[in-house]
Length: 389
Ligand SMILES: *Cc1c(COP(=O)(O)O)cnc(C)c1O
Image 1: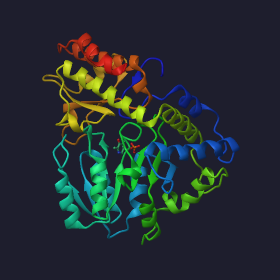
Image 2 (image 1 turned 45 degrees about the vertical axis):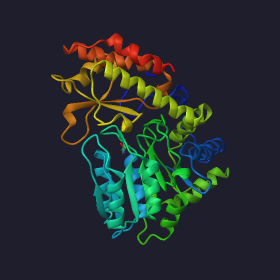
Image 3 (image 1 turned 45 degrees about the horizontal axis):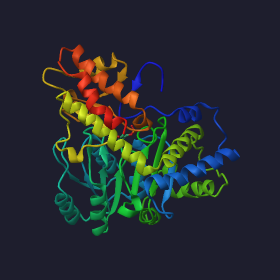
């Protein structure tokens, strides 16, 4: 953790000492033997974290979560294809914008802020549009809402539609079983629950999606073509490097360090810890009389909290919390930006109870500084048993 401020936004997040060290070391050659070993191990560990089978292809390219979204859709869909998008916030709308730019015909399934659309509505859209692919955001970072990926993937399968999930705010922090649930693509970025600095786009592409790329009418841009990159990743996993375009070697090293920590702890345990910590934060918010943006606790994400400002308080709270040494984020949902704030609780910080308590205290003291009465010690006491579980 850095001295001074604690970074508790929904990405980038605090990274572990081993990850920081790997990222800061002099950049290795992409063909150095120890780099080849690290990259190969990272790709193999991705399958474990994603719950993916051996015939799924892990993909790691330099870039952002947004690039990962673009990579997914341009490798699956050509202009004129149809897609259904479940929109639970800001990032679903971004997916629609990208699909439209690709010339894809989009049917959106929408809901109110903090809600999720009923499954029956998604089923109806699949029946009416008969699309090639279904897209959904696992955790929409603008609302803190989590959709039921298992149910959506099952629904897509039943309709013989490919399913693609934006897991930028979920992979490594929320339960996901790629092959057991029959999902076709799960994408993320390095700087969220995986606990790596920003700069890597990461996906696991299942066998049906790989087949869709093979038969695609209009190929994707070369720099994000799964067919161009596939043999490279396969070479790294086989222990021999191969060049197509330079990997972000320092970040791949950092990824390797992070995935090692996650797999060593155990994916299930790591996910369970996110759940515990989220319960702790929810207990703290309750104790302080703060309401969540998600309309129902059953679909409130475990990786972040989207918390409504109490009566008489506005976005100035974010600055007041910052004055307490903790950085949180403002709202992001169009039209509601000034009504709530967001606290990220994902990555290695879920194992650092002091940092979590410090965050609760900073929010409470920030509220006090603005003249809003809350019981800060009570909130910490409510959260602490979850943080230390
Ligand atoms: C952060 C985020 C993105 C965008 O990732 P960038 O790296 O900022 O481009 C996309 N989807 C979700 C759900 C996110 O949380």
